[in-house]
Amino acid sequence: MWKAKINERRKRTFHEWSKQAGFLFQERTLNIPDVGRLRFLISRPEGADSRNPVPALIFMNGSDGSAEEIAFSMLPYKSEPMAFVLMAVVGSVDCDFPMATDSERVTKALIDALETLEWLDSKNIGMVGFSFGAYWTFISAKTDSRIRYAVCNGMPFRHTFQMRTSFKLNPVITDSLMSLFQVRHPFFLLKIINTLVERADRLLYHPSGPILAINGDQDSIVDSRDTEIIGRAPGNQLLMLRNDDHCGLYKFDRMVKILVAWARRHSLNLRETQLG
Image (cartoon, rainbow, N blue to C red; front, side, top):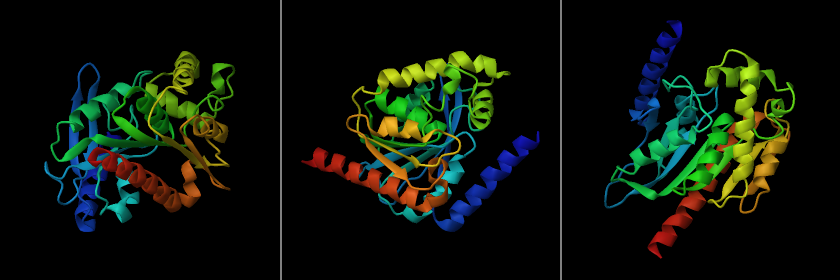
């Protein structure tokens, strides 16, 4: 019960802040057949309409983050001519369903919904993921061609998921996965983790839009070598933040500036291609 009260207060105080900051977001609920309800936030830039559709940038936060947290960090970029679509990671408090090994279908359903908005350019969509949200950003970018570019920040992969061969998984990761997948014992994560690693392995060299893999080189939660694997794959780019922790925690403002610049550049390139 106290969690429900905290979530309601979170939503209420966020909307109050949003109005005061002049950075308005509409809260929406998406009903996904055979899955459940997803809550997300979306901003609409001034002047965006059917004659002047704007690109969209989807954000998926990590297991301990929220959609509102992303909005706070994006405040300096509220004048960007793009829509920000914000969600917490699948299986979190903003979903009424657990994570599954095929949870990219949630992103697919979200993009289906975005395509119905006349003021949004559905051919110019990017995605940014943090931590476990970065995993689903990677899978989504590889399986849905509508995601034209992506940023994977602090993505867990082979080295982080050592549990596929032993039980040396970081306790923080273990607790998060047990909560997200709603399992009662780490033993039941073994098959899940094997599936997650195998899926990412199969898709590593699958064609997609460009992916920026970014992380702190001293990550204490996710093994930084996983970021290097993604960033060194053909067509991708690697950026390690020196002497920083998970997802660029200590240089967060700089990290956000980098990912916005990446999104802006690739979004503009797509728009020029469409016009040209």
